[in-house]
Structure formats: structure tokens, C-alpha cells
Image 1: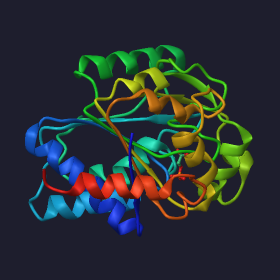
Image 2: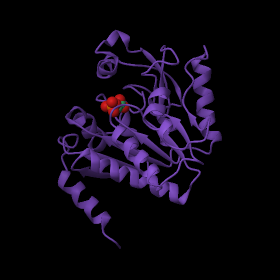
Image 3: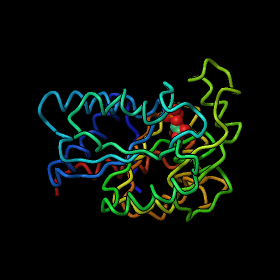
Image 4: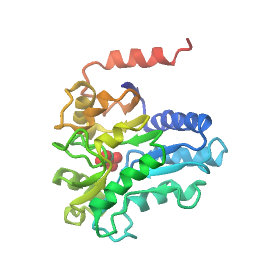
Length: 259
Ligand code: PGA
């Protein structure tokens, strides 16, 4: 795991976008995994700017969202496919039909989850997966106590997560769905690169466990310790409960030096 503690969200967005731009340069037909939530929004804004500046193109790329709520109308503003379209896909040059998400409207979400897992495999797997982290340590909607090797599946949203997400539903937790389809931890672990972003004090406990805790289904994101190409971009608030900040800063600075 490579860890960068950066001064602000703009710097995080820039460092994250550099990795996606580098991926585009070596593989224009890249497959990107997209996360929803507040955290990646500055990154998506930066990607739109770089697209407009001619620095990268999504014309040959495909995207696969991490998760989708079950139970919202398909055109609901907070549906995750709609979120991704509104905040990224509609502003860049993805080909029609190239942006994918779990289909939570088929009437058989278990079958839809399995089909989505297979679709990612059929696409050749995800080159780079953007990840946020929940305050309870989830990635995607893989909540505590789920299998660390799960495939894309129907999951339950804990009340902690529903409370965290109620800000998108006028503060009404009862409006937040109780179920979702989410890429599993085993699915996420097959991404060739994971790019985790965590900002804000609210994430400090989860970040401490992610980096310095034991691998445990109590904190599902800790499985990323077993991934050989994961980068974690943090602001100082999210990093505030880490024990070895000086060490991470030293390693990151040395990694930026030319060999
Ligand atoms: P957030 O959500 O970016 O809105 O904090 C992250 C997550 O729940 O994975």
C-alpha cells in the first residue's frame, strides 16, 4: 500500500487524476471502476477539466460503477448510475453504452449481481478502481462482517451507512434504501490498481484501521492490505489517527524522487 498525506482536496484530485491520465496514455481503451459519494467529486471535476483540455479521452474506455441502491426509481436523482452520469459521464466522451452499473431494476437483483460480476470479467477486468471508504470501513457497500472474498452481491446497508448517506435524502434516514447491489471485496481485489481517497476527520478511524489495523471483516477495507497495487490518498484530517505519519511522508517523498 502506498500512502500519500496531501494538503488539500485539490492536490488529492490532481494526484489521482495523474494516475488516470497515465493509465489513459498507456492504454486508451482502459476500464475504470467508479465510486459514488462526496469524496471523488473533486477528482471527477478534475478529469472533466483534463478532458476539456485535451489531456485525456474516454472515447475507447468503459466504466463500471461499484454499487447501486435497490428500491429507488430508476430515474431517482440519488441513484448511483444517475450520480455518475451527472458528475462525470455526461461531461466527457464515453461512447454510448460504455458506462455500466449494476442493474437494480430487473426484479431479480441476485441474478443481476452475478451478471454484473461476469460482465466485469468479460470486459477484461478493471484497470483502475476508484474507491472511497465508509466511516465503518466499508468499500463499495461491503459492510462489516461480510466475506472478505465476496463477489458482486446483494448487500444490506447498515443504519450507520444510511445515517451517513441521509444527507443526500434531505436528512431523512427512512428515505435511504436498506439494500444495494455491490461489487464484492473479491471483485474489488481483482482490479489491477485501486485508488482509495479518504478526506475528513469522519474517516480517521476507518483510515487508521485500513492502514495500521489487522485484516478483519470488522473493517472490510483492510483486505486492501493484501492488494499489491493500492494507493491511498489522504488529507491531514483523515490521516490524523495514524501512528506512523512521519514514516509515510518520508516514503512518499522518496518515491517522488527520480531514480
Ligand atoms: P463519501 O462515501 O465519499 O460520501 O464519504 C464514501 C463511502 O461510503 O464509500
